[in-house]
Amino acid sequence: MPRTCHTRQMLEDELERARIRRVNVTEDMVTLYLEDGRVMGMPTVWSPRLSGASEAERQNYEIIGHAAGLHWPDLDEYVSVRSILLGRRSAERTNSSNQPGKK
Image 1 (spheres, rainbow, N blue to C red):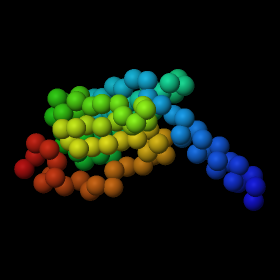
Image 2 (image 1 turned 120 degrees about the horizontal axis):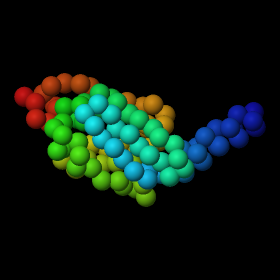
Image 3 (image 1 turned 135 degrees about the horizontal axis):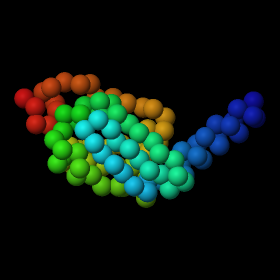
Image 4 (image 1 turned 180 degrees about the vertical axis):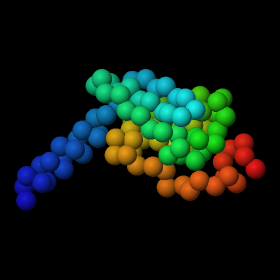
């Protein structure tokens, strides 16, 4: 069905164009301010590495991939704008033995 393909392509184009302008990271939430004015959030509990991280580890991030994602080098964690827009959680299971700073 052509309409479905067209709609799917429009969604893919929209996901591809979403770029980060600014980021705010708290204990509970990663908030992205996109170049087009949208504000998107991801609860840190969606990422076991972020939810178990210290404040300093959470604040040490970099915007990567032409502003299409975030990387926390201390945590080896990557989050894309696309995954947040699609509501995708980390595939990693919560386990206290694999969270930074937890034993």
